[in-house]
Each structure stands twice: as structure tokens, then as C-alpha cells.
Image (cartoon, rainbow, N blue to C red; front, side, top):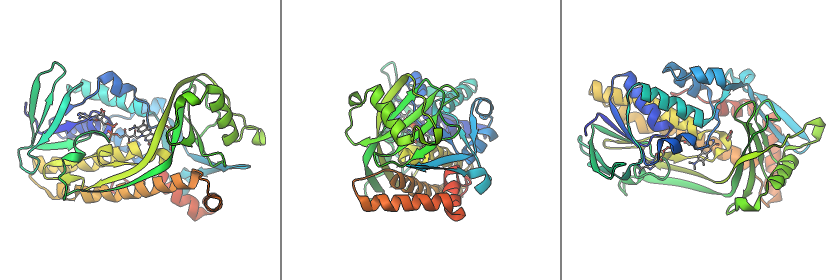
Length: 391
Ligand code: RFL
Ligand code: PHB
């Protein structure tokens, strides 16, 4: 097989890249280890920042988002006895949208199917070859067990944190940075109307808690738990009791409405960046190059921003033989990656409790500053609602 751009991974980064390239007449083939159903049903991120929504809309992917998504002006930050609303629209003129990654994925799959995009699901043995030549290729075993070779002008690794692309950059060329946090999130989905109009991020001595949502009938909530936590130790009652305590049920008459839990899982938290995001004819995008803890709601948005920068660079490289944007892709993308890495780390360390009473006082002081100072609130809002794609 031969194509212009071989894309490894059919998550949001891979499918959006194929969609953006197709707008400029660039052909791509996508390969994916999982089944289409598995990829479509993975429950992950929920918040789209302003520039993500603008990009999706600009390429015809905004209709259902506008109809079924929910625009939020800001978030609540709270600690025992106090809840404060930060209004991002007042502070920065930018809002965020609640629209699950599962929905973004469905819209992308539908758009690519309508365009006749070639996607090979359930492949195995993906391997990358000759990346430092102008004739790179990818080999894999297809769903029927046949060995395949995909020749391309460019290979893009959109294969998330466990794919082979990141490792295909040779030692001595690549560098990486990592922070593993000493806590995880226990996340639930529940068939109950959200008890809040906008997301609540709560600091509490028992640990962080968060109230998010997917629709007017489905709530998404999280609890800070120790690493290594077994979900089996958390009965539904224990989860709702802890959420009620940490989210301040009863304070000022606010109530947390419990309901049937339909999904429960534990997510470890880490920050990771690998540089450069390009090696020869291999480009990395999304989780393949960087992971952030979910506290800043940045993972999906960064994946979208990467391919928003990469697509025009590949168009210029392949159509005009102009390598300028491709040569600056890694540096341009990494500016935003490091900003989001810092913001996600900052939100995470401000809100998750440890055994250290000194840390707790610093966290509370920071929360008071962010919720009472225009400068503090604007800094958070600017990062949360998102910087322009070209930042
Ligand atoms: P994805 O979505 O992981 O997609 C990568 C795709 O590559 C496939 N793949 C391969 N394909 C071919 N050959 C191989 N050898 C392959 N190896 C892997 C995978 O099957 C997969 O389909 O990466 P992408 O596109 O970069 O998108 C990034 C986002 O998905 C990610 O940043 C966020 O979902 C992160 N994230 C969250 N972010 C938030 O902002 N808020 C959240 O609440 C949130 N929850 C989460 C998350 C990530 C999770 N992961 C990765 C474990 C919850 C979870 C469980
Ligand atoms: C979610 O809705 O899953 C979500 C929202 C905001 C975050 C993390 C996760 O910071």
C-alpha cells in the first residue's frame, strides 16, 4: 500500500489529522490496534477549550457539539466552607464546552467514514521503518492475519502513551521528562442529573474531589485516592458518602444527588514530555509525545492543538515542498505543551492533599489568592479556557 501520510492511531489526534489533511487534498491511511467499537466507547476527557471548539467548527465538526454540548462560562473552586465561581468569559472573553471525548470521536468517525477514509482497525505488530529517509514505511499485520507494508512520504505517530512511535525516535536524539504523582483518581459515571450547573473542583483534607458531567442526565465525578487503590474496595455507598463530604453536601443548602453508578475506574496520574516531536519523516502528536494529569482538562485539547499545527506544516511540506513549518513544528508545539504541562501540574498540586500540613496551608493560600485577585483568577482562566492555537 502507498499513501502520502501514514497515521498510526485512530484516537482524536489521528482521526482529526486525517480530516484536516483531507481538507487540503492530502491522502492518508490510518491504522489502529483496537476495534472501532472499543475506540468509540472509551470514556475519557469531557472539557473542550475555546480554540478546540473553534478548530472543530472551522472544519465542519461543530454541528452536534453546538446542539448537544453545553457551554460553560467557568468553574467553581472550593474548600471547606467556601465556594467561588471563576467566570472565564468575564475574565478572558473565552468559554469552554462540555462535550465528551466519546462524542468527539463519534463525530470524527462519521466524518471520515463519509469521506471514504481508509482506516485499518485491529492491526497488530505495528513497526516503523526508514524514518530518516524520504521513503519511510510502516509494517503491520491486518485483521485477517496478513502482513502489510504501508509506504508513505510522512509517518505520524498518534498512537497514545503505549504506542511504538515514541520509542522509534533513537536514543541519543530523544529526551524525556516525567513526574509521577503520589495519588490517583477514582472516576465514576452515574445516571443522575448533575448537582451543579458548572464543574466543581474541591480541595478537602480527605483529598480532592470533582463534580463534572456529560449531559443533563449523566454526571461524571472523581475522588483523589492513593496509588494502587482497588475499585473493589469502593462500594457505591462509600463513593457517594466521600463525594458528599468532600464536595460540601449540606453547606449553604447545596445537595449532591446520588444515583446509579454505571462505570468505575482508577486512573493513575503523571506528567510526561518527550522531545523532539519530530525525527526525520516521523512526527509525534497528542499523547504519543506528552501526557498530562487530568486536573487541568488539557489532554484532549493538546492533542487537537498539535494536529492543528501539524496539518498546515505537512500540507506545505508535501504540496509546496516547503519544509519551514515542518522544521518548526516541534518547537511550536512544545511551547504550548510545556505551558499546559505546567498548568496541569499547578492545578494538580494546588488541589490534591498530602500528609504535609505546610503544603495544605500553601494550597489554601493559593486558592484564596486565585479566587480573590483579578490577576490570579485571570491567569487560571486564560490557561483553562485555552490559549490561541498559535500560542
Ligand atoms: P489516544 O486517544 O490514546 O489514541 C491513541 C490511539 O492509538 C492506538 N494505538 C495504536 N494504533 C496502531 N498501532 C499501535 N501499535 C498502537 N498503539 C496504540 C490506541 O489504541 C488509540 O486508539 O491518544 P490521542 O489521540 O493523542 O488523544 C489524547 C487523548 O485521548 C488524551 O489526552 C485524553 O483522553 C487524556 N485523558 C483525559 N484528558 C482530559 O483532558 N480529561 C480527562 O478526564 C481524561 N481522562 C484520559 C482520561 C486518558 C486516559 N488514558 C489514556 C488511559 C482517562 C483515561 C483512562
Ligand atoms: C471530565 O469531565 O471527565 C473532566 C473534566 C475536567 C477535568 C478532568 C476531567 O479537569
